[in-house]
Length: 316
Image 1 (cartoon, rainbow, N blue to C red):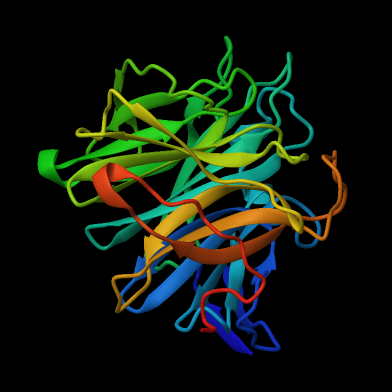
Image 2: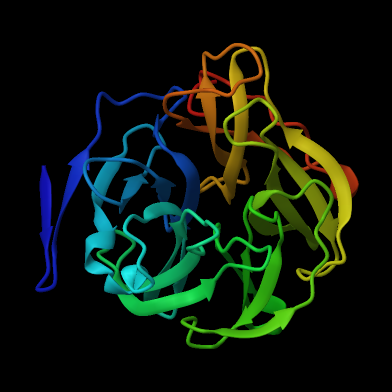
């Protein structure tokens, strides 16, 4: 067991075992993935122990994962209870690196008629955390919009960061230009929902084409799936390209994903959650798991349908 200490907090790194090359790689949902040098980091929605907390998982081989955390604990965030909310859930984070600092965006739910959902932001010096919170909401939901599922995209051509968010209550996608501090929202960009958008936006660029992928359907049933749209601009307008990841006979409700390039290769990967060994259309009970499979770009901006596996991507 490895230990890490700071003056502000104590957190522990634990190597998960036994090592496995197979799917699923870990329990959890809504995995955000970040690549730093030769290391892949995953930040999931993960109910682990008491309270609402986030953990980080790192791997150099996509087989053995080391846990760090909690990297952010809701017991330290007094602002989320100022409106009288008694319970808050820690959902769907996103991490980016910029100029030597890490910015951790996260969702506070659920949304109700009385209490809106929020997105917060915290910062740290390492992808292993801990992250120090800004002390206030970055974005608050309401009026047909659920403020969950943050995603930040570095628009290199225009030297700016775009902030995307939107969730199932209202199923509305909103896009902002982030303030240069990355701790405040700047101008909102009017955005039309792409077809079948429900939640979980993710944006990446490949061969000069911008790919917006997102989840559709109900997270507890077989309708949950990943859909795809493309544009010549990271702000759209978006051309719908269809579904790239959907339920099969053994795995149900795949979605809320990240897309990365495997370190040291030209191979692209999709990291997502799913229900394993379920039958029927749901609703399903129990826990979701995180899987990693290959993602292939086709011609003319297409993404080929993803094949879900139990072997994973580290076996040939």
